[in-house]
Length: 234
Image (cartoon, rainbow, N blue to C red; front, top):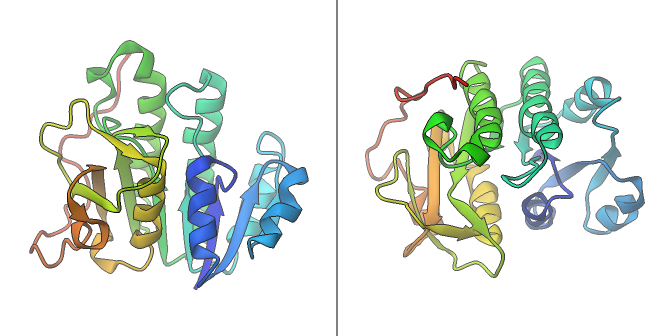
């Protein structure tokens, strides 16, 4: 499968790329030319892009011919307002547009737990969750086969290889998940048709990742959109 990873220089995107490059034809869209040789050694085709000046052109070049696109570009909850707007909203939306134009078979979008109701979160998280909300809603109405991955608070460290996953997690307050497990979930979602049209909330847990993502065996139909989604208001 030909797969484009957007945000491949981030901690999660890098882990996703390294995993997929073993079995897929992977293209990495990166911001820093000095990292090109490093990513080529991982087995990836590399396209560098100045996301503030070249994104419209390069995103379509990168997306052309791909079977799947992973959008993992994010400034993170601690990012500046400018970086959040650029990566979590604008890059995501332009990638979705390009994927639709190029008729990409499946798009996996990294979002965040709580993005469906940013007004309910602490004030310092509003910009981050609002940008993710916009990208989530945009892909839900795109007509693409999509999967949205919404991790709770992400922490450093090795993965457990086990999670809890639901379209509506129960009592995730204080829960965390490692960067490694988030990357594993994203990679495992790629070939999982049972996740098409789903927004999946994930946290560290006791269920092996592939089992946790097997929604078909649990008989849970995809909701194809969130009934709880609310457009954020300032």
